[in-house]
Length: 258
Ligand code: PEP
Image (cartoon, rainbow, N blue to C red; front, side, top):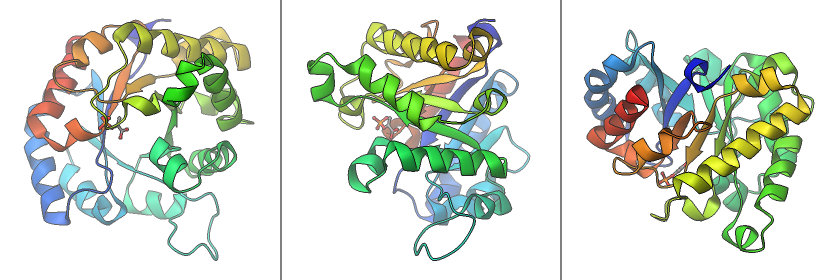
């Protein structure tokens, strides 16, 4: 199995942006542009909780899937401000970003909570996009692989071989997110290949070959094609550039052609 048979996935992560009318407008602008990706590239918009219903309605009948940006691990209970996996499913959400570096950095996410959220998402039938990535300092100290291996092992702890094939891994070097600094295609490829090797160790080669691995970190209309041409980069998780329909579409088209 190789890249040609893995699912290519381009996902926008809108972060804390867009009101509901703005969300509808952006999705309506993206829809016709990416229609040709159907059957070739999975296109996802991950939006704030308040935009989920709007996004599900606006994407109905199109090839765009909707994702949330976080999920809690409990089924229900005293977790003020949190949203459960069942609540997301009820709204019509298919994907959920888990362990984004901004959640780890600003909201105390740990590998343990990322693992619990991943398990809860899978149990509810959601497809998790699990984010991993090293800090700038960790790269400078030459421990990128150590950090990534630990995150992969812990974040996917007790996730079965069948379930891990539903997980998307997003390699997002923290120093490249929202900074305009992008990992070079070779740097990104090196770590994505390392992630696949870790999956092969934890599961087996066939399973590792089936998992979609995205790169994220200042991916944009100008650099996407080169990144997506790499053999272990199966897609992208896009922040800033996902807020502009033409830029997001250029990235989707690069994946369609790549
Ligand atoms: C992200 O939010 O996951 C991301 C990669 O952001 P940006 O593309 O803006 O660096």
